[in-house]
Amino acid sequence: MGTVVGIKSVADYDPARVLDAMRACLEPLGGMRAFVKPGQRVLLKPNLLSGFDPDRAVTTHPAVVRAAILLVQEAGGRVKVGDSPGMPPVCHCRSPQCIVPRLRGLAS
Image (cartoon, rainbow, N blue to C red; front, top):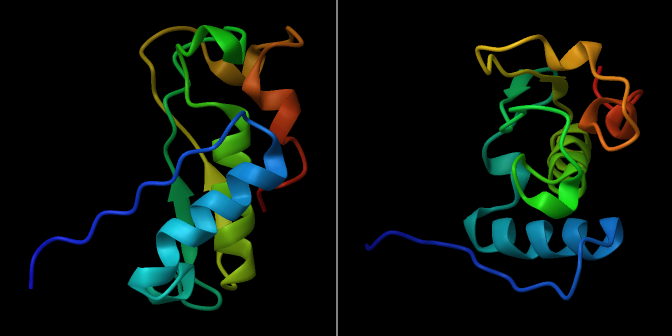
């Protein structure tokens, strides 16, 4: 069997569209439940280089990280989000463009 790759185009970063697209990409592989078991701890490691506006495409878009968090949680996983970009911690980011405030409360 060859390598299975899921690719889905979305018109924009609307959170519901991104979630649906990620779910559709994972479906042929057995969904997120094929990778995450109930109670399993999962570290998502997006690119959190700095607190840039998502439209600049410097970091992983918050809608993508949000969708990944929700899919892991639906599978019963316990999510942490982290990165080590080698600069001041992203958790200190207070700008409205920063990914941290956009995801606050989602990860366990």
